[in-house]
Length: 103
Image 1 (cartoon, helix red, strand yellow):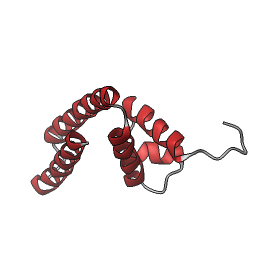
Image 2 (cartoon, rainbow, N blue to C red):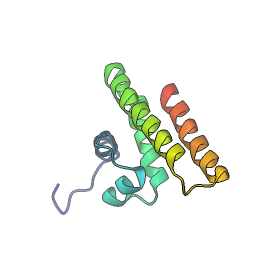
Image 3 (tube, rainbow, N blue to C red):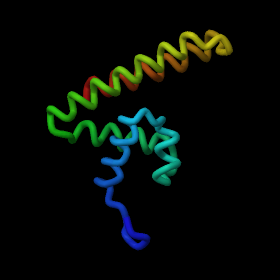
């Protein structure tokens, strides 16, 4: 992209999908794409997922649910987390997985 071109929302959404498919966190995606917060990257991901064609959406959903499952497993195995923090993080992952399933 040239220095003078302004990325469109669609091109940003496509980049978010690509980076997420590569396993990037929403925080890292936000930093890379100069979005204000990780939640902005997450919102763009969910919008792009919901507006993708059915076959593409199913593939993206499957990959994202697998990543979220792996994240939940890593959270469960972290010995440095107290039970309250572990449950908070697992609830957040479960909520995102529910949103992805409905998209």
